[in-house]
Length: 355
Image (cartoon, rainbow, N blue to C red; front, side, top):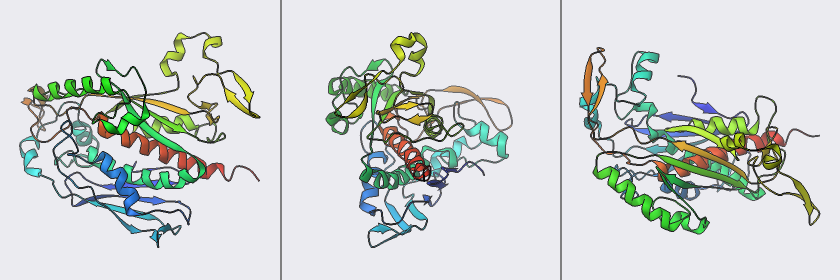
């Protein structure tokens, strides 16, 4: 099955299914000499792992990442880095009743039509379980980029119709919603819990930022940084829209409003606004890179819904089991990972763009 790899210089390939023995990732192209440990990877895996709060799935996976190759005595060797994460709490029997049903807004029908066969245990390859691999790879990319001053983080800016009104980065990891507005986070949590109690789910918007990214990253014309970043973020489960900078709001502005004017300060160029989201002409300009992701409500809900079965007969389905009533808090670390992976790839490609 194609489409399991991303990147050209910093290449990430994930493998495994939701209810298989393990999932994992191979990162190729990482330079030698980068400090990396399982502890560094685990910090990020713990932020994405299931069962971490009352508003996440109660599948209690430890998500322990084990480095199988590519690291020796605490540093990368230049060889492919293989990280494996065992599945310890898969309950395939929860899906027995669904094996012949296509769950609404899941990948079930699409996979059946494409391959003629599908792993019905928790969605198999299409499950968000696969994103643990991305987070592990993102930890490698973070280790590569941190020494050059790149700092990537993501936070939830809205859940359904509740929007963050203030920004305090220190609050993001202090609440289970991962929102930078503590008061909004409380209202978001209450909404998510109410949806769970009602057998329903909610979506929202995540913002991902990269501060300290150097100017010059991006490969015109088809490998523009914003194009590759949009692809990476759109590849995340449940993401249905991506915008960079002012995004769709740019269509509401005059050019005089939307242009990011420049001036000099302390001998270096600075921008007076950031409607471009840190990227002009497909190349980073040194400003903060900003992307926002629209995340749909979790399609696995307890409410009865219309569907069809594998014999193309009409049926009804109610999805039992352990599911997130809102995937946003656990998707934020995944968004960080995909931004880090994209920036790491373009950073390494940029190093060879000049003599």
